[in-house]
Length: 299
Ligand code: KIV
Image (cartoon, rainbow, N blue to C red; front, side, top):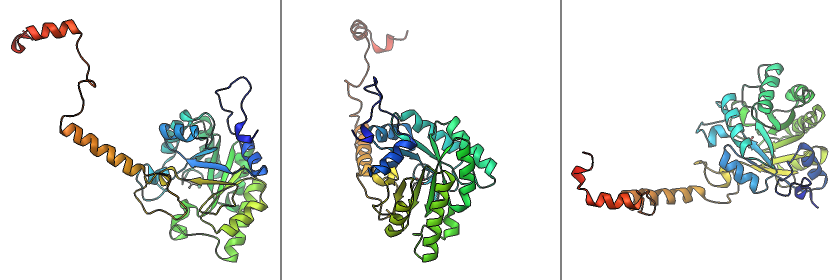
Protein backbone atom coordinates (compact mmCIF):
# COMPACT_ATOMS: atom_id res chain seq x y z
CA UNK A 1 0.00 0.00 0.00
CA UNK A 2 1.41 3.42 -0.88
CA UNK A 3 1.55 6.34 1.54
CA UNK A 4 -1.30 8.03 -0.33
CA UNK A 5 -3.63 5.02 -0.12
CA UNK A 6 -3.65 4.64 3.68
CA UNK A 7 -7.15 4.87 5.20
CA UNK A 8 -8.36 5.27 8.75
CA UNK A 9 -9.72 1.90 10.00
CA UNK A 10 -13.52 1.77 9.94
CA UNK A 11 -13.89 4.98 7.97
CA UNK A 12 -14.02 3.72 4.41
CA UNK A 13 -15.14 7.04 2.92
CA UNK A 14 -13.04 9.33 5.07
CA UNK A 15 -9.57 9.81 3.65
CA UNK A 16 -6.75 9.98 6.15
CA UNK A 17 -5.53 13.53 6.58
CA UNK A 18 -2.06 14.19 5.24
CA UNK A 19 0.34 15.37 7.94
CA UNK A 20 3.88 16.71 8.02
CA UNK A 21 4.94 13.14 8.70
CA UNK A 22 3.24 11.90 5.52
CA UNK A 23 5.24 14.45 3.53
CA UNK A 24 8.46 13.24 5.13
CA UNK A 25 7.56 9.61 4.42
CA UNK A 26 6.96 10.52 0.80
CA UNK A 27 10.42 12.03 0.52
CA UNK A 28 11.94 8.95 2.11
CA UNK A 29 9.98 6.65 -0.22
CA UNK A 30 10.83 8.90 -3.21
CA UNK A 31 7.13 9.43 -3.96
CA UNK A 32 6.66 12.95 -5.39
CA UNK A 33 4.59 15.36 -3.27
CA UNK A 34 1.91 17.05 -5.36
CA UNK A 35 1.03 20.56 -4.22
CA UNK A 36 -1.15 23.35 -5.54
CA UNK A 37 -2.54 26.66 -4.33
CA UNK A 38 -6.24 27.25 -3.68
CA UNK A 39 -7.99 30.34 -2.41
CA UNK A 40 -11.67 29.51 -1.97
CA UNK A 41 -14.14 26.73 -1.12
CA UNK A 42 -14.97 25.35 -4.61
CA UNK A 43 -11.37 25.20 -5.80
CA UNK A 44 -10.30 23.70 -2.46
CA UNK A 45 -12.91 20.94 -2.90
CA UNK A 46 -11.78 20.20 -6.44
CA UNK A 47 -8.09 20.20 -5.55
CA UNK A 48 -8.63 18.03 -2.46
CA UNK A 49 -10.84 15.56 -4.31
CA UNK A 50 -8.23 15.30 -7.07
CA UNK A 51 -5.84 13.82 -4.49
CA UNK A 52 -3.41 16.75 -4.28
CA UNK A 53 -1.27 16.24 -1.14
CA UNK A 54 -0.63 19.81 -0.03
CA UNK A 55 -2.75 22.90 -0.54
CA UNK A 56 -1.19 26.29 -0.03
CA UNK A 57 -3.32 29.36 0.47
CA UNK A 58 -0.56 31.39 -1.13
CA UNK A 59 -0.22 35.13 -0.83
CA UNK A 60 -0.24 34.91 -4.64
CA UNK A 61 -3.96 35.34 -4.03
CA UNK A 62 -3.16 39.06 -3.92
CA UNK A 63 -2.40 38.91 -7.64
CA UNK A 64 -4.51 36.08 -9.04
CA UNK A 65 -7.66 36.47 -6.94
CA UNK A 66 -7.62 40.09 -5.75
CA UNK A 67 -6.07 41.82 -8.76
CA UNK A 68 -3.06 43.49 -7.08
CA UNK A 69 0.22 43.98 -9.02
CA UNK A 70 2.28 42.01 -6.50
CA UNK A 71 1.85 40.07 -3.26
CA UNK A 72 2.78 42.90 -0.89
CA UNK A 73 -0.61 44.54 -0.19
CA UNK A 74 -2.53 41.43 0.95
CA UNK A 75 -3.46 41.65 4.64
CA UNK A 76 -3.70 39.20 7.53
CA UNK A 77 -7.48 39.55 7.52
CA UNK A 78 -7.68 38.70 3.80
CA UNK A 79 -5.35 35.70 4.20
CA UNK A 80 -7.33 34.43 7.21
CA UNK A 81 -10.62 34.87 5.36
CA UNK A 82 -9.42 32.82 2.36
CA UNK A 83 -7.70 30.21 4.52
CA UNK A 84 -10.95 29.58 6.40
CA UNK A 85 -12.83 29.11 3.12
CA UNK A 86 -10.23 26.63 1.86
CA UNK A 87 -10.17 24.77 5.19
CA UNK A 88 -13.91 24.16 4.90
CA UNK A 89 -13.36 22.40 1.56
CA UNK A 90 -10.62 19.99 2.66
CA UNK A 91 -10.83 16.42 3.91
CA UNK A 92 -7.42 14.99 3.00
CA UNK A 93 -4.86 17.55 1.87
CA UNK A 94 -2.30 19.17 4.18
CA UNK A 95 -3.25 22.83 4.55
CA UNK A 96 -0.51 25.47 4.58
CA UNK A 97 -1.26 29.18 4.95
CA UNK A 98 1.13 31.80 3.62
CA UNK A 99 2.04 34.54 6.07
CA UNK A 100 1.59 37.87 4.29
CA UNK A 101 4.24 40.56 3.97
CA UNK A 102 4.38 42.63 7.16
CA UNK A 103 2.92 39.92 9.42
CA UNK A 104 6.33 38.62 10.60
CA UNK A 105 8.77 41.40 9.66
CA UNK A 106 8.52 43.72 12.67
CA UNK A 107 9.37 41.29 15.47
CA UNK A 108 9.44 37.58 16.26
CA UNK A 109 6.63 38.04 18.74
CA UNK A 110 4.47 39.59 16.04
CA UNK A 111 5.39 36.71 13.68
CA UNK A 112 4.51 34.17 16.31
CA UNK A 113 1.17 35.73 17.09
CA UNK A 114 0.30 36.05 13.37
CA UNK A 115 1.18 32.38 12.84
CA UNK A 116 -0.96 31.30 15.79
CA UNK A 117 -3.97 33.00 14.22
CA UNK A 118 -3.69 30.83 11.09
CA UNK A 119 -3.64 27.69 13.24
CA UNK A 120 -6.24 28.68 15.85
CA UNK A 121 -8.68 30.77 13.81
CA UNK A 122 -8.35 29.46 10.24
CA UNK A 123 -7.63 25.74 10.50
CA UNK A 124 -4.19 25.73 8.83
CA UNK A 125 -1.88 22.82 9.67
CA UNK A 126 1.25 24.86 8.91
CA UNK A 127 2.35 28.33 7.90
CA UNK A 128 4.84 29.35 5.22
CA UNK A 129 7.29 32.23 5.53
CA UNK A 130 9.81 33.60 3.03
CA UNK A 131 13.52 33.84 3.81
CA UNK A 132 16.42 31.65 4.91
CA UNK A 133 19.07 32.26 7.57
CA UNK A 134 17.46 35.56 8.60
CA UNK A 135 14.26 33.67 9.51
CA UNK A 136 15.87 30.71 11.28
CA UNK A 137 15.35 32.08 14.77
CA UNK A 138 11.67 32.83 14.03
CA UNK A 139 11.19 29.32 12.62
CA UNK A 140 12.70 27.93 15.85
CA UNK A 141 10.31 29.97 18.02
CA UNK A 142 7.31 28.91 15.95
CA UNK A 143 8.38 25.27 16.06
CA UNK A 144 8.79 25.53 19.84
CA UNK A 145 5.21 26.83 19.94
CA UNK A 146 4.02 23.65 18.10
CA UNK A 147 3.54 25.49 14.80
CA UNK A 148 4.73 23.62 11.70
CA UNK A 149 6.63 25.92 9.37
CA UNK A 150 7.33 25.63 5.66
CA UNK A 151 10.28 27.76 4.51
CA UNK A 152 10.49 29.48 1.13
CA UNK A 153 13.79 30.48 -0.48
CA UNK A 154 15.15 31.46 -3.89
CA UNK A 155 12.86 33.82 -5.75
CA UNK A 156 10.84 35.14 -2.83
CA UNK A 157 8.06 37.38 -4.20
CA UNK A 158 7.82 39.44 -0.99
CA UNK A 159 11.38 40.69 -1.79
CA UNK A 160 10.39 41.84 -5.29
CA UNK A 161 11.69 45.37 -4.76
CA UNK A 162 14.98 44.24 -3.18
CA UNK A 163 15.50 41.69 -6.00
CA UNK A 164 14.69 44.33 -8.62
CA UNK A 165 11.94 42.18 -10.16
CA UNK A 166 11.09 38.49 -10.39
CA UNK A 167 14.49 37.02 -11.31
CA UNK A 168 15.93 33.52 -11.14
CA UNK A 169 18.17 33.36 -8.03
CA UNK A 170 21.34 31.40 -7.23
CA UNK A 171 23.17 31.91 -10.50
CA UNK A 172 26.51 32.97 -8.98
CA UNK A 173 28.62 30.76 -6.66
CA UNK A 174 28.07 33.23 -3.84
CA UNK A 175 24.29 33.11 -4.26
CA UNK A 176 24.42 29.32 -4.75
CA UNK A 177 26.26 28.84 -1.45
CA UNK A 178 24.00 31.28 0.37
CA UNK A 179 20.89 29.40 -0.73
CA UNK A 180 22.42 26.08 0.39
CA UNK A 181 23.10 27.64 3.81
CA UNK A 182 19.56 29.11 3.89
CA UNK A 183 18.02 25.68 3.30
CA UNK A 184 20.24 24.09 5.93
CA UNK A 185 19.42 26.82 8.49
CA UNK A 186 15.68 26.32 7.96
CA UNK A 187 15.98 22.57 8.43
CA UNK A 188 18.05 22.98 11.58
CA UNK A 189 15.52 25.47 12.96
CA UNK A 190 12.76 22.88 12.61
CA UNK A 191 11.05 23.66 9.27
CA UNK A 192 9.01 20.72 7.99
CA UNK A 193 9.61 21.48 4.28
CA UNK A 194 11.13 24.16 2.08
CA UNK A 195 9.70 25.70 -1.08
CA UNK A 196 12.42 26.32 -3.67
CA UNK A 197 11.26 28.93 -6.14
CA UNK A 198 12.97 30.19 -9.30
CA UNK A 199 16.40 28.60 -8.90
CA UNK A 200 18.53 26.53 -11.30
CA UNK A 201 17.70 22.83 -11.48
CA UNK A 202 21.26 21.89 -10.45
CA UNK A 203 21.04 23.93 -7.24
CA UNK A 204 17.60 22.52 -6.38
CA UNK A 205 18.98 19.00 -6.89
CA UNK A 206 21.90 19.77 -4.58
CA UNK A 207 19.66 21.22 -1.83
CA UNK A 208 17.16 18.36 -2.16
CA UNK A 209 19.89 15.77 -1.64
CA UNK A 210 21.38 17.69 1.32
CA UNK A 211 18.12 18.06 3.25
CA UNK A 212 16.26 15.47 5.27
CA UNK A 213 13.02 17.46 4.99
CA UNK A 214 11.17 17.63 1.64
CA UNK A 215 11.79 20.34 -0.93
CA UNK A 216 8.83 21.53 -2.97
CA UNK A 217 9.82 23.21 -6.21
CA UNK A 218 8.28 25.88 -8.38
CA UNK A 219 10.50 26.76 -11.30
CA UNK A 220 13.25 24.67 -9.69
CA UNK A 221 13.39 21.61 -11.93
CA UNK A 222 12.12 18.04 -11.58
CA UNK A 223 14.44 16.67 -8.89
CA UNK A 224 12.68 18.40 -5.97
CA UNK A 225 10.73 16.11 -3.63
CA UNK A 226 7.50 17.76 -4.75
CA UNK A 227 6.12 20.32 -7.16
CA UNK A 228 3.76 23.22 -6.54
CA UNK A 229 2.01 25.51 -9.00
CA UNK A 230 -0.45 28.35 -8.72
CA UNK A 231 -4.00 27.13 -9.45
CA UNK A 232 -4.75 30.00 -11.83
CA UNK A 233 -1.60 29.26 -13.88
CA UNK A 234 -2.78 25.70 -14.49
CA UNK A 235 -6.02 26.96 -15.98
CA UNK A 236 -5.02 30.13 -17.85
CA UNK A 237 -6.80 32.40 -15.40
CA UNK A 238 -4.07 34.92 -14.59
CA UNK A 239 -4.55 37.45 -17.43
CA UNK A 240 -0.74 37.75 -17.41
CA UNK A 241 2.17 36.25 -19.37
CA UNK A 242 3.06 32.72 -18.25
CA UNK A 243 6.39 31.80 -16.66
CA UNK A 244 8.03 28.96 -18.59
CA UNK A 245 7.63 26.48 -15.71
CA UNK A 246 3.87 27.12 -15.42
CA UNK A 247 2.50 24.34 -17.60
CA UNK A 248 -1.13 24.97 -18.58
CA UNK A 249 -3.47 22.00 -18.07
CA UNK A 250 -6.70 23.59 -19.19
CA UNK A 251 -8.16 26.80 -20.55
CA UNK A 252 -10.75 27.89 -18.02
CA UNK A 253 -10.66 31.45 -19.41
CA UNK A 254 -11.89 30.16 -22.80
CA UNK A 255 -14.43 27.88 -21.09
CA UNK A 256 -15.88 30.72 -18.97
CA UNK A 257 -15.87 33.22 -21.87
CA UNK A 258 -17.79 30.83 -24.10
CA UNK A 259 -20.37 30.05 -21.39
CA UNK A 260 -20.78 33.74 -20.55
CA UNK A 261 -21.40 34.79 -24.14
CA UNK A 262 -24.01 32.02 -24.55
CA UNK A 263 -25.75 33.14 -21.32
CA UNK A 264 -25.74 36.75 -22.52
CA UNK A 265 -27.16 35.76 -25.91
CA UNK A 266 -29.88 33.55 -24.37
CA UNK A 267 -31.09 36.31 -22.04
CA UNK A 268 -30.91 38.92 -24.81
CA UNK A 269 -33.09 36.72 -27.10
CA UNK A 270 -35.48 35.78 -24.23
CA UNK A 271 -34.38 32.17 -24.63
CA UNK A 272 -33.51 31.98 -20.93
CA UNK A 273 -35.28 30.98 -18.76
CA UNK A 274 -37.46 28.45 -20.58
CA UNK A 275 -40.90 27.38 -19.33
CA UNK A 276 -39.29 24.27 -17.79
CA UNK A 277 -36.94 26.54 -15.85
CA UNK A 278 -39.87 28.58 -14.44
CA UNK A 279 -42.08 27.99 -11.37
CA UNK A 280 -45.87 27.73 -11.89
CA UNK A 281 -49.05 28.20 -9.91
CA UNK A 282 -50.94 25.01 -8.95
CA UNK A 283 -53.06 23.66 -11.85
CA UNK A 284 -56.46 24.78 -10.32
CA UNK A 285 -55.21 28.32 -9.79
CA UNK A 286 -53.99 28.43 -13.37
CA UNK A 287 -57.48 27.39 -14.60
CA UNK A 288 -59.07 30.11 -12.41
CA UNK A 289 -56.64 32.60 -13.82
CA UNK A 290 -57.69 31.80 -17.37
CA UNK A 291 -61.33 32.69 -16.48
CA UNK A 292 -60.50 36.05 -14.95
CA UNK A 293 -59.85 39.05 -17.15
CA UNK A 294 -56.33 40.47 -16.44
CA UNK A 295 -57.81 43.88 -15.47
CA UNK A 296 -60.08 42.28 -12.80
CA UNK A 297 -57.35 40.16 -11.14
CA UNK A 298 -56.32 42.60 -8.42
CA UNK A 299 -59.66 44.21 -7.69
O1 KIV B 1 2.05 32.48 -2.88
C1 KIV B 1 2.24 31.43 -3.51
O2 KIV B 1 1.39 30.97 -4.28
C2 KIV B 1 3.50 30.74 -3.30
C3 KIV B 1 3.81 29.59 -4.20
C4 KIV B 1 4.15 30.11 -5.53
C5 KIV B 1 4.87 28.71 -3.65
O3 KIV B 1 4.26 31.12 -2.46
